[in-house]
Structure formats: C-alpha cells, structure tokens
Length: 101
Image 1: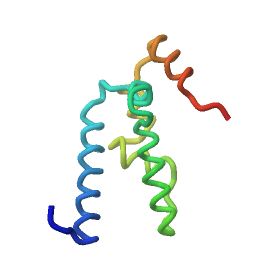
Image 2 (image 1 turned 90 degrees about the horizontal axis):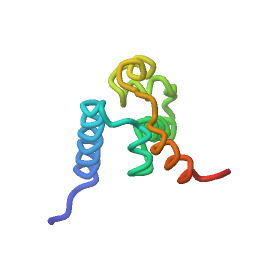
Image 3 (image 1 turned 120 degrees about the horizontal axis):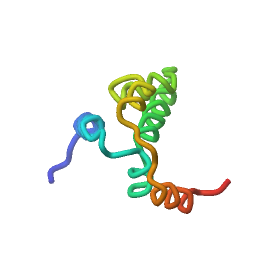
C-alpha cells in the first residue's frame, strides 16, 4: 500500500468506527455481556472511549451523550427494547474473566 496521509488515516479510522457503531446498532440481538466475554469490550466501552477522546480534545461530553451516539438512542430506551437477562453461563464467564481491583 502506498503511503497515506494523516488526514486519510483519520478519515479511514472514522469510517471504520462508524461502520462498527452502525453494525452494533443493527445487531441488537448481540448482548453487551456476549461482546465482553468474546471480545473484551462492549457498546459501553466504545461510548467511554468516544467520551475519552472528546475530553482529551477539551470537549466535555456526558456519559449519556456518548452512549446515545453509540446506541443510536438513549441508553435506557435501548435497554428496555433490547437487553435481555444474562444467561447464567454467560454471567459466570463474565465474572471469571473480570479483572479484580
């Protein structure tokens, strides 16, 4: 691949983020606990990373605002529409893989 400019890199990374965000919005059947167990991150992590980036740039953004950017709707609305009770096996796996403070 030829060298890409910093601007192109930023555009490609932003496009990849938007595609991941949109994919997760479409796949409401995939629960956050499943994402955490499989990949070690979930929609909430993604929203936190978004907020961290904004704050690093001097832009204050709330947890609720960053979650709405990722979920495409207020978090509580998404939870009531799409979140299901965690499967006991998934919950056990999540607890066993959690870093302990």
